[in-house]
Amino acid sequence: MQSFIDLARTYDSQPARIGVLLQRIDVGRGREELYRDRAPQLLESLAANARIESIRASSAIEGVDVAAERAARLAASPELRFRNRDEKEFAGYRDAIDYVVRLGASDYPTVGLALHLHRQLYRHSGGRGGYLKEEDNEIAERDDRGRRRQVFSPVTHQQTPFHLQELVTRYRDAGEAESVHPLVLLAAFVLDYLAIHPTLDGNGRVARLLTAHELLRLDYAVVRYVSIEQRIYETKNTYYAALHESQLGWHQGEHSIWPWTQYLLEVLSDAYDDFEARVASAGAGKSKQERVRERIIEAGPERFKFRDLKLALPDISDATLRLVLNELRDERLLRTEGRGAGAVWIRIAPES
Image (tube, rainbow, N blue to C red):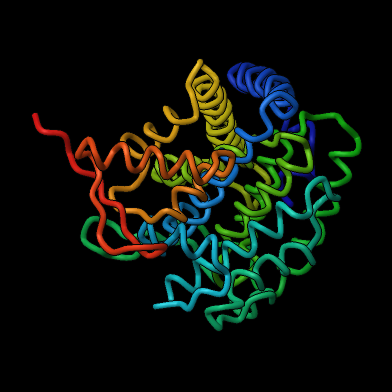
């Protein structure tokens, strides 16, 4: 809650770069609203891809690894049996992000929401989800020699209930006062949540879920169409470095939110650029058959099943998908193993 005690000290020193990023993001949001009416089927397709990317990436940040083909099946089939703990944790994030999307434009986050999302994360793996920590935890990293080094001491377990409730209350009050751009407040909220570290584990994943919740509530719906988690995973060293820099002096209220805020806004700005590029590519005179070919040859996994392709391109008919698959097989760019619904399509590298 330290970022919300003295609002003038925390927010009056906003760097110029922050204003530039906020302007770019708000322009992107305005264009995104136009696409919702003009290309709903395309956005549905982007949302299906982003959902799987987000589940895989947020899990991978925490060392949970599920192969792309298996991830697509787990994302599409809640009843699928799990092979290992990684798949159980993957399914937990799947359930939690789906819950966030179903909430849509809901109210400000609460302690209850954070604990419910934490409970969702561990519903399949048997972890103790949905409870605040009952012992102190730490934020640590390992050096090149594998030695563990503490980089930040979160709030103690005795202080956690008070700090967490104060955080959600002060965040709501600051948002309703409209004295600071809501995305800057969101960055400060996430920073403080991670500094409190209210549960023994799963804090990073819950923080990213709460980020998605707030972006949807604030109508920055790019989080549905482009995976923010994937961008964090791809830049996770910068992610951790920005958090660390902004947490220096946090307990004394002498920290700066700006390194972390700039990082998060850069991610959002890049996501809007990516969103527009994907929409432009899909709408640049490309037929549905061309989009299918591009997905299979350039963007999709090397091995896939028909249902995986259908999940990635939900706005394209089964007949069109099968037509392109057969054409690529005739061109010796694809081959198949097996028959029927269980057949696996395998991409063949073109001869040089």
